[in-house]
Each structure stands twice: as C-alpha cells, then as structure tokens.
Image (cartoon, rainbow, N blue to C red; front, top):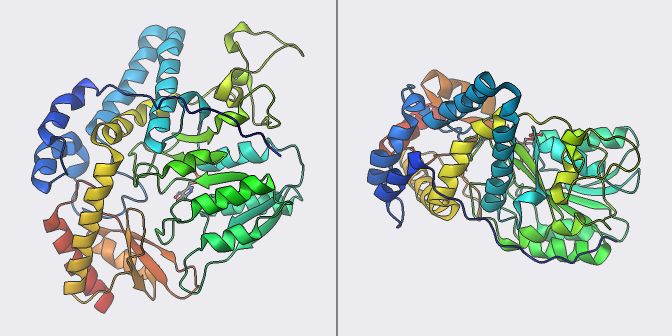
Length: 423
Ligand SMILES: Cc1ncc(COP(=O)(O)O)c(C=O)c1O
C-alpha cells in the first residue's frame, strides 16, 4: 500500500559541547565505573543531588543536569536581548534537537524527525494522515495510557476500529501474537519497543515489520521507554513511524517529544499527509504566502505544524548531549550492572524481583498494593512508582537506578523496600 524505497543517509555526528569535553575525557572510553561516574558526572548534577532521599523513579521523570537551567536561560536571554531576532538561533536549536534525536534512536535523518509536545501528539499526527477515515488498528493492551486513550477515543468517534492484543499468562507480549492479528485489512499496528508497565523489551520486531510490509500495514513504534535507555536495534529504523520524548532517560523534561517518520513517506508522491499542520509546515513559513499554490516544506518539515514551543529544545539539550557523549550502549551496560546489583541486594533482604529478559532500564517488585507501598516508601525517602500488573492481580513497583545511583544508595533502598514489603 505504501511505497518502501529509500536509502539510509549517514547518522549525524555531534560535537561534544564545551561543558562536557573534560568530563568525557575523565570518564574515558571503557565501561563506566562508579568511581569515575561519581568523580566526573556527579558535579554536573549538583542541584538535583542536593535533594535528600533515594530516587528510583528515573524511568518516570529523569533527573536534569545543572546545565539544563543554563540552557533555558540562554533561550530567554536571546528573547530579552534580540526580541524577534531570537527566531534565528531558536530555530537552529529546533534543528539540533531533531538531529540529536535521530542519532539517539538510530533514525537515518534528523529532518525526518518532527518535534511534538507529547508522544500522543505524534500518534495523532499519524492517525490524521491516513487516506482512510476509519483505519483498522492493531495495538497491544500494554501501550501507555496516553496512547491507549487516544486510540480508544478515535474508536469511540468511529474514527478507528481496534484489535487489542492481550498479554500471555505471564503478563508479557509475544510478537507472534501481534503478527497474527495483522492482515491485509490492517492499516496500522501500534506497539511499544519497551513496555511501560513491565519493562519488557519487545523481541521479534523484524517479524512484525515483515508481516506489516506484506500486508501494506504501517508500523508505529512507541520508543518512549527505549530511547536513551537501551540500544535500539537497527530493524526499528525500518518502521514507518516512531514516537517518543525526553522526560525520562533523556533528562529533558516535558514538552520535548518527537515523531520520527520513515523517509519513504516524505517524498512528493507519499499518500500520507497529516492534517495536524500549521504555518511552519509550509515551504517558506516566513514568506506569508497564501492560497492553493502554497507548498509544504521538504522532508519532515512538511509535518511541522503551528508555532513550535521553543524552550523544550533548550531544556532537553544537555540531556541529549550527555547521552550522545557517553553513548547509550555504555549507559545501558552500566544500568544492567546496577539492576543486577539492586536485585542481589533485594534478594538479600528477602524481596523477590521480576527480571524480565530482555528488559529496559528498570526492574520489578511484585506487591499486593502498589499505591500503598509506594506511599510508604516515599515516607522513608525512597521514591519509586508502580503500575497494576497486566494480569490484573496486584501491581509492580518499578525501580530504575540511573547512572548517578551509587551502590550505597541501592543497598540502603533495598533495606527500606524490604521493611515496607514485609510490614
Ligand atoms: C511507553 C510510553 N509512551 C508514551 C508516554 C507518554 O505519552 P504522552 O507524551 O502522550 O503523554 C509514556 C509516559 O510514561 C510512556 O511510558
């Protein structure tokens, strides 16, 4: 149904920013170690590390670098000093955000990444681009609430017909079960690369994409829990769309989200053109031309929309730069070690963990009453969160040690979690 010819262009290289250069030298090029992380990285997070307590909700809202406030101040200074002259550097920052995002998730071209203020907005842009008014959509029951609610809202307005893929008895999703639901009638399949409730990392993506190709079905990947947390396998770049954002592993706060579009949908002959549009989607937005002859911009620019929110690009800059400077692979390998250490410590105090293989950046502790236990943990200074089990029985506390977390903190958190779970 949709054409599939394109050639990969080189993923952009990014210069290390001045504030990070000496830090990255100190860290060196090998595996990360706690000693080097504490010595080199901790000073870059002095503001957030002043806070008391142990923060294990990094999978929810990532911890910002001190530099984030400096970067936002830069955007404001441009405004104070240059007024509408700020648009030049502001829009350059938007392009840099697009390019950095592409590099982090392995998308072939930054111009094919479109800034959005939420991942859900990215999904809606896709739904509002289809040449059919009531698409058949296959999605899993494990998609995040925002995505789930958007899909259900479209269905409630007769703007979509949904097929939900259930998890298996272990609460995990199986790519074969997803693939089985894709038929010639399916317009879109929506699936997470890493599931938000359990951290399960999807395997068999190539199978889903191959089946989707055969059926002319578009694939939308939700990469929110994968981007910046785990290396994204290269086959993901053959999906039609990827959505995600910055407030978790990219430490970029809210509003700095994105929709990545496969370049095969960005040619003049593409059948997809979103109705989520506005003057920035035009070829020359500042030309102020009107009428039928006005063309859309090239590549992903055609999917831009109204006046963009500028501050999120600055707010997200330092976190993205850190990810690129250290490398997602190295951070993920370190996170694996940290998770293993935390699991051992939890085991020592008699708390069983659920370690799904493969998984993203957090592990699970099963509990009967997840809200109560997270509240009790917060009372003793351990910040975590939880989600109901996909099976409907009890809930999982999600624990994500980010790179800043020390073993001493993990030991102490394990003790507190043990006390709460046993009480
Ligand atoms: C998998 C996943 N997708 C999307 C989102 C956020 O969606 P939105 O930006 O639409 O609020 C989250 C937030 O936790 C998530 O975990």
